[in-house]
Amino acid sequence: MPPDLAFNNPEALWALLLAPLLLVLAFWERRRRATLRFSAAHVFAGGGRGLRTYLLPLLPILRAAAVVAAVVAIARPQSRDSRVRDLSVEGIDIVIALDLSTSMEAGDFRPKDRLNVAKEVLAEFITGRVNDRLGLVVFSGAAYTQSPLTLDYGVLKEVLKQLRTRVLEDGTAIGDAIATSLNRLRDSEAKSRVVVLITDGDNNAGKISPLDAANMAASLNIPIYTILVGKGGKVPFPQGTDLFGNTVWRETEIPINPELMQDIADRTGGEYYRATDPEGLRQGLQKVLDALERSKLMEGGASATYRENFHPFLLLAFGLAALELLLRATVLRVFP
Image (cartoon, rainbow, N blue to C red):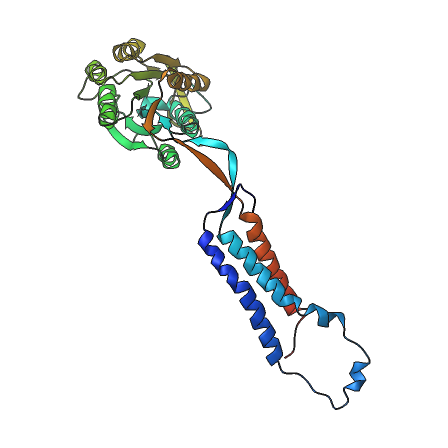
């Protein structure tokens, strides 16, 4: 066996003893098999033994070989990879606070509205993470935790996909969103904890003022990175549908407060970004990552990585078994 090859389940190799047992049973069965006797056997003796007679012993050999290949596959042969995996997992605890107010239906990112663009960009952002724990808070007139901090990015993307406007009471409770996000991060032991606030409007609801919430974040040493989505001023906004089911757009004034976003970021040591198109939102999220310091969530050393090599043996086992069954049912079929 090559020096870099090992078995993950070596105890399974004891099953290799089944292979010679199968051969012995096949030999014993063949000795016990009934034979046809002829009073004039010399008539057939002159014809000699055909090729089929020599191939019949191949059937138990194929079955035994299939068992050997299957047992080796179950033992999971692995080869050592030349790369070494670092067990010190670095990551950031990030809570994303996403605005779900009706103003996120504005169509200045057409053909899609602000919310759908934000969801697409956030899905890309989540896919690009490796060891960062992510949480999701949604808000409009009130704020709710949609997902606690997790490393299960698949579940988080599914949760993100289901988000809709007009589910919560309308409004933009920025202060409540920040406070809820801080509550998710308060017990985190990560060195780097951060809130990413994505909104397209001004605070007009909630029980906590945005600046009071920003001061709480500053006292917890949690920076808030604010991303203001949308162009501001008059933007296309859906006003129902026409007789043919097409969306009717009208220019509507949606107030924004970039000064508030800048103030929140400054008070907490974060950064403020403006996203007037999908690419601007992508760049804003990337800049957030670039600005953060990595923290170690788990300590460890180094470990070699292994590559699974059971697949060829498994395919060989299926192939040999299928060949044995095919021959037994066709050209090497035995009567009775």
